[in-house]
Picture 1 (cartoon, rainbow, N blue to C red):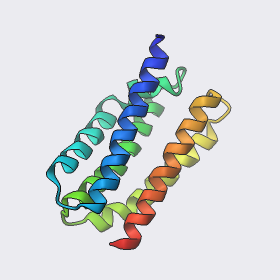
Picture 2 (spheres, rainbow, N blue to C red; picture 1 turned 180 degrees about the horizontal axis):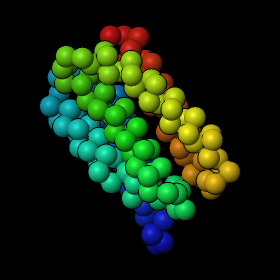
Picture 3 (cartoon, rainbow, N blue to C red; picture 1 turned 180 degrees about the vertical axis):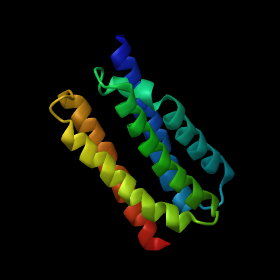
Picture 4 (cartoon, one colour; picture 1 turned 90 degrees about the vertical axis):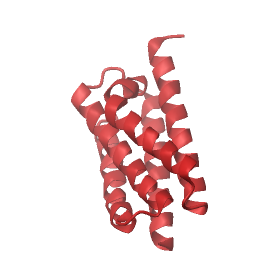
Length: 140
């Protein structure tokens, strides 16, 4: 398996774990396992987003990929606050809408440099995060 395919798989699995934990955590607030799972996903994106996003954008500049990892990490951190029922959860989810929109705009801006698969993957993930934040915000 090529390095890019392995990184793409790692990134996709990390995202799926995060989005499923966010959904289940939203439905079952206060669950520590889901809270810590979201915290780990957030830390993974923050620390290694610049590396694992090379699976979607192999020629991407590390600073751009770090920014994408930071945006993903921030959105998942807001889901962590909601799942844990911690203060400021509503504030962070409100800001997460902006983070998701910034991520989508960035992907659309660099679409010509992305592979077709990477572009589609980034868009799907961005719109899923945006949808989740809007749903969560509307029920808080």
